Image (cartoon, rainbow, N blue to C red):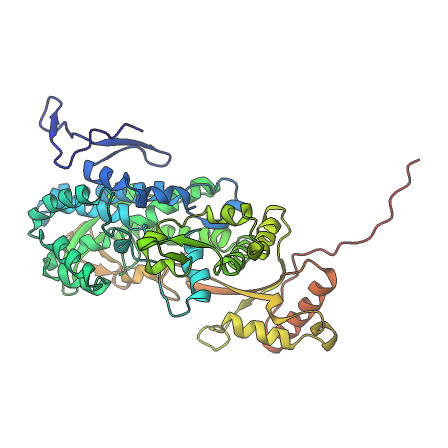
Amino acid sequence: DVPTENVTSSPERIDSGTEDDQLLQGTKVFNDSVHGHIEIHPLLVSIIDTPEFQRLRFIKQMGMCYFVYPGASHNRFEHSLGVSYLAGKLARSLQSKQKSLKITKEDILCVEIAGLCHDLGHGPFSHLFDEAFLPKVRPKYKGKVKALRTYTPREGTELPIIKDELLTILKGENQEGFLEVVDEREKKGMVSKEMVEEIWSSRKKDKSYLYEIVANKRNGIDVDKWDYFARDSMHLGIQNNFDWKRYLRFARVLHGPDGSQICTRDKEITNLYEMFHSRYSLHLRACNHRVNKILEAMIVEALIEADKYLQFPGKDGIMKTMSQSIDDMEAYSKLNDHIMWTILCSNDDNLKKSRDLINRILTRDLFVCVGQTQLKKKGSQLFNIKEEDAEKEIFEKLSEEAKKTIKQSDIIVHIAKFNYGMGEKDPVEHVKFYSKCDPNKSVRISEIRQDSMALPREFSERFLRVCVKQRDNEVCRWVREAFKKWCKGKELTAKKPWFEEKKKTKPKSVT
């Protein structure tokens, strides 16, 4: 890393000889494992060099997947740098190809900031915290902690410098009052997603496509995915067939009745399906890997057991539990993957259950998967069955003898969902294309695609897995039989179990 002591709140240009070859004083160069050497604007450097952002160095991009794939050791920190870099690449590509869009350097910088900060709200072990832990300890809370809330002003931070630089940039967009409004409403406890949308509602509609560069809610084609497809695949040792550089070459903004959006050439349909298949493949082989989901269940149980007893100093020194920390950014900023080792190294008797679970992870004494079945009949009640309902139904299938030993809480059901990012829908149906003959007219895939046997017909599938907390042959066999009965009653096929019974064998005599 290049030292950042020369970063200032009012960056100046250093002339390197030509008008096109100028660097901002304080620009930092990172040697990224995926994208190579990338230059970071001084304003972004000021954001990076804060405790809130540096915290991302200690949150694994793929959570517990590191215990399945030894290469999955990358963190949210480098992913955020990559997303920021790709956001700038796409914005500059559009700027250079379509001068009529009038994309300014301020636009590009704002998009880069959005890419840089998009994951600031992640908790320990990434999605495990907001998708598995929080729903159980805070059932009414939905979604991950908003990134905006992690940058609340407090004494001793670099925020004043960042704010001054942001104001300098935002003046070019007539949005210099944005942070003042945020500050004012922050004091009144009124900061919310809706408030931010209200403040930015005055932004010109013809630049709405800029909001789809980092997180595209329209069709899922965004630089966040481009980076994690490339980064996760590289670290997992899985082939990534999507070529984002090719997409960049053909990306073009077109205006229509439903607003401005980024379109691509009609011949890029196959490349887009490759992109969405990369997502499906990563979830199938890594994110929803059978052992990874078992590890997640174990660490979530450990965190739940520890939640009441493990506390962190928040605002005004008030101690907060993990589940309470989402309402206190001072406490929340202290949460990262090291929570696992904090529990393990503690001698608090209240954390013994959590320590035992973590020790089971480290010694590979994992919960056991006793069976799996594919949920069919899309749209049916069975296809949308809840995990807790399935656990109850399978438990009821146990024999009376088995129920004397097994509790319902000993059975874990996980429903693995695999799709192309939009549930049962085809995301490419929501993309617009243009042709070589008419580059200013956008059309949907239904207007240009011919039926192909090579393209997918279904875009979603679900598998139900049953696990048992004890590694006891008899317990596993009982739950396995109950699961088979449940499947038979639902007209489903139970796959063979992954566990193998430990057979007692006589030692061979040495002759």
